[in-house]
Each structure stands twice: as structure tokens, then as C-alpha cells.
Amino acid sequence: MNDRTSNPGTPHPATSHPEWDKLLSNFNKLLGMTILEWSEGAATLAVDLDERHQNRSGVAHGGVFMTMMDAAGGYAGCYCPHPGRVRRTLSLSLNTSFLAAGRRGRVFARARVRGGGTKIYVSTIEVSDETGTLLAIGEGVYRYRTGSEKPEGVPVDS
Image 1 (cartoon, rainbow, N blue to C red):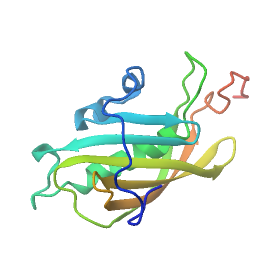
Image 2: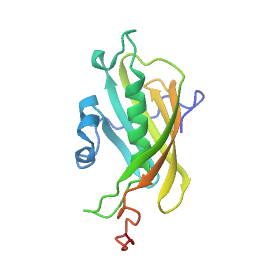
Image 3: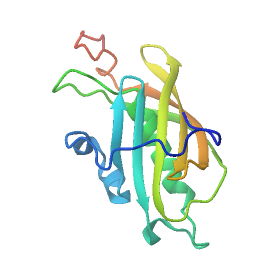
């Protein structure tokens, strides 16, 4: 995870894996979200901010950052390396602290799973801009949807 002292020049892929963005919800697509990095316990999402994302004060609406954080935290716990299998979660809670305003350009939501069990997990999420400035931080609690707890296809009791 980045902080203000991290290298802001960390490269990020310009586009995501073509199959990953098919998994985004229609709402996330409406915001222009894309999945840049996704692996076991981690996810990085991006949105290119423009005037559509601004609030009345001319800065990015906090709801954009919260939506990115919620999605990134959920994806961090849902990666499954087995083709054709999908893990799904639902959000139980999301704590957010806004630290700086985002205006235009690409912003990133980086999440990593901190811990959890077979049904519930916790993700830590940070939103930063292209310069590495930390815009928001948070923590989300997620619950696996029934049948999603075992990505290896092990039967789950109903």
C-alpha cells in the first residue's frame, strides 16, 4: 500500500485484463472504473476523473472514492485462479476517511485483505492520485455469498 512517502512513480498498466472488466457491475462501468491489477488478496482499480465525477465545489465527489474503495475491497477477497469460477461478496461495512481532494486525472483504489475467516474478511483500501498523493483511506468488511466461500469448488453446506 502507498503512503505519502512511497514512490509515486510506480508504474500502472494503462489497461486492464479484458476478462476482468466483464465482471464489473453496471454502476462501476458507469463511473468508468477498470480493474488494473487483481491477485489473491489484492486488487487495484482506476477511474479517470473528469467533470462528470465532480461535486458542486468542483472536486471529485466523495461517493466516487467510496464506490472505488468498496469495489476494490470486495475484489481483493474474490480473486479465483480457476477459470470459469466466480467468487462474490457483499459489503457489511465501510469506514472511510477523506484526506485530500481529487480533481482530474487517474485515481487508484488499492486494496489488500488483512484477515478473516471462511465467511467474512476485512480489506484495507487506499485511494491515491497519479502523483501518489493519498486522497482517502478506509477499511471494509465483506461476507462471501453462499457458495463462494470455497474457490476450489469444494461443496459448501447451505
